[in-house]
Image (tube, rainbow, N blue to C red; front, side):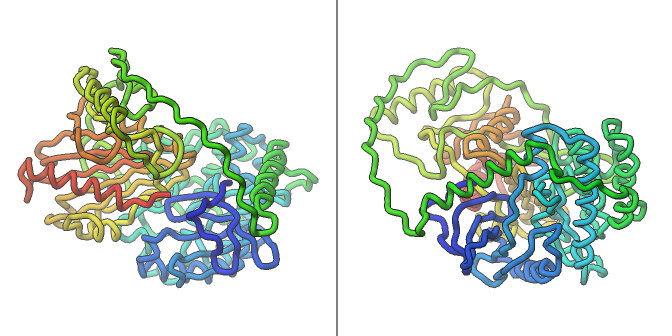
Amino acid sequence: MEHVGPAGPTHVGPFKVAGVLGRGGMGRVLLCAGPDGRLVAVKQVLAHFADDEGFRARFRREVAASRKVSGAYTAAVMDADPDAPTPWLASVFVAGPSLGAVVKSDGVLDGSVVHRLAAGLASALVEIHRAGLIHRDLKPDNVLLTEDGVRVIDLGIARATEGESDGDTGLTRTGWVIGSPAFMSPEQAESKPLTPASDVFSLGSVLVMAVTGSSPFAGTSTLRTLYDVVHSAPDLSAVPAGLRGIVERCLAKDPAARPTPAQLLELLGPVAPAGRQWPPAVYRMLAAQRADIDRLFSDDPAGEAEPAAPEPAAPEPAAPEPTAPEPTAPEPADGTEPMPVPARAPEVEGDPVAAPTRDAPEPVPPRPAGPPTGPGGASRSPWRGPRRLAALVVAGVLLVAGTGVALYVRDRVTSAIAYAAVPSCQVARRDLPLELEPSTKDTWFETAEGAQSSCNGGSGTAASPTVLVRWDLSLGGDADANAATQKQRFLSEAAGQRPAPRLGFGTEAYWGPAGAEWTCVLAVREGNLSAWVGLRAKPYSKGACEAKAKDVARAALKAAERR
């Protein structure tokens, strides 16, 4: 929970904004207060989705359907405005930690607690499906453990089932896969039409995570995970015997073989009543959450808090003298931790796709990623005089030291750049200097830890494009942690590649392997975001290709949304 900051909104519709509850690939959730003082959670959709009239139409339908869902097992919808410049939906604020947060903080749940969890989730799905909705993103972070039981939240990417009999799968019809790969159903991973049985599969994966700490299909990459969801039999040996048979039926690859939520309740049987339904850690986290809310509101109890007197500014520390880096770990110019020399990453070929084929997961081209450098948001302070010269000297030593790390560190200050979302391909076609026509190979994945998007196009066909731009975004922590995650991935893929110095933007960059597949490939990282650009032989010569790739990469970073 955090303040929205001076640039954030003060009101959304009739609701006064108090803070930010969370962010994701499609928007952010704000903690607000209604005119009567009731707390509400307001989900704002990101601006680039608001520009898509098709998305607005789906959002209107989802709002209408969500109003039909009982608040007993979900967060009841209070108000919405699908036609606002930034569409939003307000629901009752439900206090309680997510299942994912509880397992991460306190460890896995025992059998009796998971039995109670399973019954609560099945009851919630009964209500959701009765309203004509499919949740589409049932995962541990969308399951709240509250004092009165289980609540399922975030119906924001659900879609009313009416109108899908013709095979139109809405957001998935162009190859986008929306949801969390480790908790998807096989039909969702393959972008096929969904039924309520898809949510039952996700329920089975959530129960496995609750007793083992991880999804039964979690792999080393998104495509590996999706392949396992579609093809692999999960290891359920750690699931308690009393639940194993039920979970196994939920995880059937054939949707028709899965039980309905009502049948699940019959299989589970009655749940013993209890004054305290969850482990002690849940109530400790509830108390901490309430304390955070109190702090948010106590900062401005009257609604017009007096500005605090400014504290005397601390003297600026003297700039350290540049020193030669150690031969085994040269110090980057931006003041981050010394960069390790990563082992050479395995070479990867091929185009990214939305989901695996039935034979094997398709390989993907190298993907940039890496961590940030200092605290904060998007602001960067200019460097002046001797300090800038010192930074350039250190950066120059890095490039000639012969470490084998094929990237550069731009001369910039230690401020972590924080991005909130990757752009849609519709936005990319508008903002990037490319002929980026719609392609059947466009992809988009959203998870709790971030998002990945691939936009294809150029002068080729929709199935065989000549241009590829990909974004890889890390979320889930603060700006420094997210950028650190991205940097780690970026370094592993940069090993052995040719550096791309003097771009004038980005923190690290490298030229990827070219050849018959690509005339040139450029990867750039900035904070918690990496952009990957690949251009084919036509219409670019090698020199023109690299110049064009730089322009596209710069625009790709700008097209992503910053916090």
